[in-house]
Image: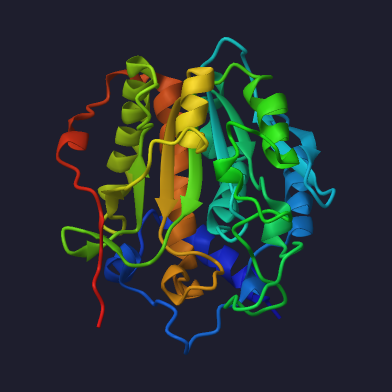
Amino acid sequence: MKTSRTIAALSLAALMASGTVAAPAVAVGEGPNYGGNETINTSILRTYDEMVTELQKQDARQPAMELEVIGQSVKGRDLYLAKYITNPDNPTILYLTQQHGNEQLTTEGALEFIKHLGTGKTTGVLGGVNILIVPMLNPDGAMGDVDFPLDGYIADGGRNLTRANATGTDLNRDHVAKMQPETQALHENVMRAYDIDYMIDLHHQGTQSERDGELVSGSILYPTTPNADPAVVEGSKRLGAVVFDAVDSTGWGHLGRYVGGSAETISRNGIAVEYGISTLLFEMRGMSDNTAESAVLGQKSNGYLIKQTVTTLDATTRAIADGSIDSVDTSFWETLPEQTTRVTE
């Protein structure tokens, strides 16, 4: 008997092979939301151990891939970096997922992308770009192995997933002080160890954001701190243009401009300033678990959100590899409205 995870993987494989989805109206984000009537089943998401198994399997299969442990979480779980470095002189992009443990579909998408990199579909691409992927920075939160109560969390299926790490710290507010072992590992063994040009920080947001009266499938934003070098910001805008063109034109994706702050404790801002790296925040719609009903999205939407992640990673990798990112049109940022929150009765 096929498990629900196997069925989901097969559905995603068919989705990627076809390049289309059958019901764009659903994919653009029309639901289903969690309304108290649907079970949010976390058993269909990979556990930390299952993620590690998949990474090790792909590492054994793919000659171009190298797997590195960059540190440990509060609870002692290894933190992994998947590397594709064919030429140190090539431009390098870092994809970072699951700083927040309850935002897992980006990690699922990153794992699908890693499998994608091991196929003939990316022949020639790896010759022009170096790729770094941190597929789960907050494994303790992802496993609900935390030192605070889990009362009120919505998800079922064997585990809850929390935004914070085991100590209750939001890792995406720790990029100046760097007090937590997860952020220390990221900065010491990735940001300072590799010559990185671009970074996409992949997250999830709530379910009620909209643009032009239509619920978004996600939203994007470049560094907004005034301390970021203008050239870095421009590179970030170009990175966002590649993502917008790849996703918003599909018919199933619909992106807005994220409403974000300028604090440098946030990776999008702090990393841009500290390392001179062009960064982009991508907030996918919905979360895998939360205490707020408006944040959690039913798992029937998982497939297109995973596909949105794969599309994002594939498009940016190709644009950097062939150099087209250097001339991409960024004028859409001038008219892309900030998303608003849909008012519900």
